[in-house]
Amino acid sequence: MKHFQSISLLLFLFICHTFQAQEQEKDKEDIFKKLAEIAVVDQKVMMPMRDGIRLATDIYRPKGTEKVPIIFSRTPYNFNSWGDGEQKTRTAEQAYEVVKRGYAFVVQNERGRYFSEGNWDILGVPLTDGYDAFSWMKDQSWSNGKIGTIGCSSTAEWQMAVAALDHPSHAAMVPQGFGAGVGRVGDIMEQGNWYRGGVEQLLFFSWLYGVEQDKFKPRIPAGATQEDLIRISRFYDLAPENPPIDMKEALSHLPIQDILKNINGKHEIFDKMVRRKPNDPAWFEGGLYHDDMDFGVPSFWFASWYDVSITPNLALFNHVRKNAKDAEIRENQYLVIAPTLHCRYTRATENTMVGERSVGDARLNYEEQIYNWFDFWLKGEKTDFKEKTPRVQYYTMGSNKWQAAEQWPPADSKMTTYYLNSTGNANSLIGSGTLSTKEAEKDNPDTFVYDPMNPVMSLGGNVCCTGNAVEGGAFDQQEMEERADILVYTTEALTEGVEISGFIETELYVSSNAKDTDFTIKLIDVYPDGTAYNLDETIQRVRYRDGYDKEVFMEKGEVYKLKLTPMSTSNYFERGHKIRIEISSSNFPRFARNLNTGGDNYDESEAVVAQNKVHHSKKYPSNIKLPIR
Image (cartoon, rainbow, N blue to C red; front, side, top):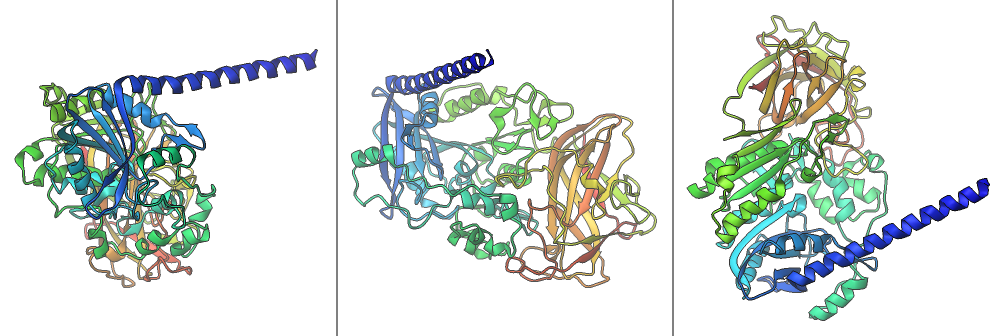
């Protein structure tokens, strides 16, 4: 009987699987059928650039003779309609949604990627490629001459620098999760998320392993016809894949300049980037946007609280609103800040989880707002976008609600200074570290030992693209706070709730027996039961305390003022909650370890153990400034 039941169960599962597969095949057929009914499909068009290089482009446009606007997506990722002998639906689904609204959808690979000719370089391909693509598209017989750009992450990051060229047809853009396209904005010098506070962020060490294709890959012969390319793409998508690896282990390798070589990854681009200092002239020659460039395009920006680049993203929005030369451009910048990880806006649900923390119903009518924006700028329709859409839409965690403001931070956010204090042993959760609005009377510096070979490990956080090395989001930090090399400073339980919305600024007075070291900080919401959820984090390499154009090393016994890169959040701390910060010298593998030698760091394997101190008194008023509403 049991044998019969087992056979019956297997038969049932087989039937269910078969039915599901048939349904999926039907869905595939349906989307291509629906697309064919409304669209002219023109794939593997080789769009010429000014230097003769051709970029592989797929075009989907409404049937008929009416001229239409274009929504354009340029990407380093694979959008080919076929893979491993199977037809893929993602691009067709995107195209259908665009075309049914009266737009042409054009998707293109960057030079050197997949079927596009030339050599690829991360954010280093010519800015003129974007400009030339706009010129080619506007001249097509079916184009009305208006082009909008859209995309998230690497599909967004090229847009800012091209916006500085102000092509007359580039009418509007929707950059999402765009931080790796930001080079320098004011005092923030991330150089496309390669750095934070002068410290290497290891996300690109991981990302490049997954995306950089081998220089020996087969190339399509010059002059191949469109028919040839379409036929070839059915069975060969030019998408080689590296074997999966344990990225957490891989990022532990020293020296860091050999990380990709150690895992047999392609590393030519990485080799030159890992040696660049934060102010290297090469950062200013590629595709990054810097604050000495103008900005010429109305933009609807999308950022996330738990994205790797939230602060530079918000700083860029403010920079454009204040500094674009054209008043119309300054006035037409809008922003959405969601409580999600990188590029996960539309994955919000009725109970949105970010790591271990529920932030409630974080859904938003993204599609409606984006097309309303494009209808206004590309079709010239008198939509109600400006009447219905706040300048800034931001989600406040804790109170779990969407809010609106005319600027960022909200005008009614007031900076309130909280000072660090202790009896000299703020080490770990059981130490004496406090945060209050009163300065410490006497300097009782908190001392901890930073051993680069036993770093504080990353737990959650505002991250992207690190494989299995770091899981992003909010996680309970209590177990981490048992470490003696983490200084913990906490307010008393709040007698009434407070909202913190804006940039968080930190000034520390520090000393060390090492020539150079790092200092890290986390901002944390502590619940009455002790649960401690991280909100944002940052780091600063001490040698760059006086700017990124010079390196100034520490002297033993000297106390230095250290201003950290701002953090950002919107979080409601309920009554009975506490505000907490953690300070240490490592957050690994989110950030590379400082080996404390004062050397280049990227080419070193031997470390120096540092004894680091945080001072707090009237003379050394270490503090954090919180934007409280």
